[in-house]
Length: 141
Image 1 (cartoon, rainbow, N blue to C red):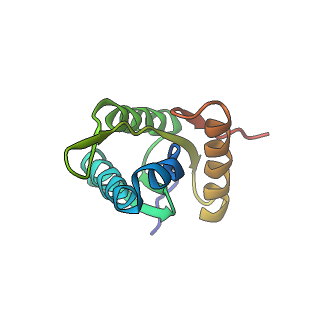
Image 2 (cartoon, rainbow, N blue to C red):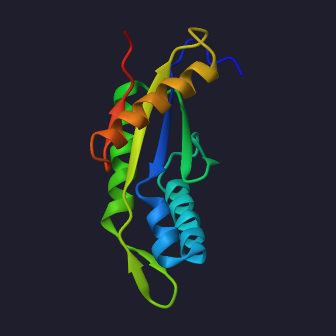
């Protein structure tokens, strides 16, 4: 679709310490966390946006007509939604879940979606390296 020069942003997010959830609580609990994480993403984005699982414990939110500032605000809002309320796992057990995220923005036809994902992935890596539970912006040299 032609976006007519409107910015498009993506948020690539990762469930912090997800491997520990599987290792400590089991894969059924891990699956429940993935389902709940996806549900919270879907319920807290605009109808215009698209959230999907990207692989493993990574999810991507595609935000058409969204500046970098607005995408960062959306990422922070989603980060708070995840951290504020414990996730229910198993028989009444609760688990605190946090996420890290990376934001990247393009104004087509500046570059392809692959470049956008790569830049968001780099920002996600920096968020995790900087202690997790945070949203990092891309850096363009």
